[in-house]
Image (tube, rainbow, N blue to C red; front, side, top):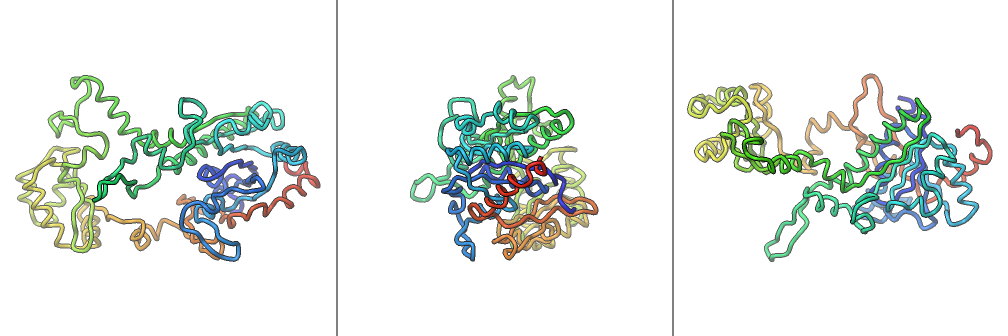
Length: 402
């Protein structure tokens, strides 16, 4: 793929910190993304760990990943000359991203109405912490806040009785940019076909909650009477906890210790459960506890739990994976962010770009396009690295940028 699906699309990215990942998604598909920075720059370069030290100085892995492939242009939007340059950039662009607190662009005179005057088919997307409406809209925040707000992450207590943030995946700061990128692409299709502009905004907290829609909608459904909303037939209609909260008591769908690690056993369908029992030569287990056709986890069956615990300790994780593949029984490996690096499925599905090219070893978007490959982004820019190049091109060839 020479230039990517978004080759020829120009994006003006006015963002700081995590929302910069939105423009990063568009870079991965070949868009030209121009990151507008104040003279002091985006301090994401020094934010979080690890910090990579090389000829470009000390830069965070977060900066190297979410700003890879972008061009950095320094503009002081308080000055008339740089505001004029920003206007020229907008005239040449398809998309403007506001990755700040809501209303930042409007406050400096570049709200949607003004942006439409400059570029009638412009697509504008604001990505912020809590969004442009609601009582939290002006509150300062960071990434974990969105998952705490949405209920995705819960505090844990250490041995000294202190509350701690558990080591979980950040959802909001990842899902927010992804949802916003999808929204931009939809609006861009309309703009290209009808010339109609769009202004939209999305919050990282919203994204965290929507990512957890299944649990939230389950709790909402449980507000209705039992006669209207019940549990599975295999549970005799008893309501389980929402989402994975209903998995704790499971036996046929549960984690088990292997000879060298752990596996996830998922024989909740009767057919898979029979395949497993036949495969380990324990058809007696199936005859004693055949289960229901679907979604039967044998909840709280301690006797069966003890039997399965002993069985799974007899093989290594790799042996159980081979067994599951051969016997058509769902069994998955249990990885960490460290061990997944050595997982053969991970090695097959993901493409690495090494540190020589991007400053740190980085993963490309795991999209597989038949007969094509996504473009390889360039290294995340130094502050103002492309200011002269971009502004000179605006002066010399303005028509070529439209």
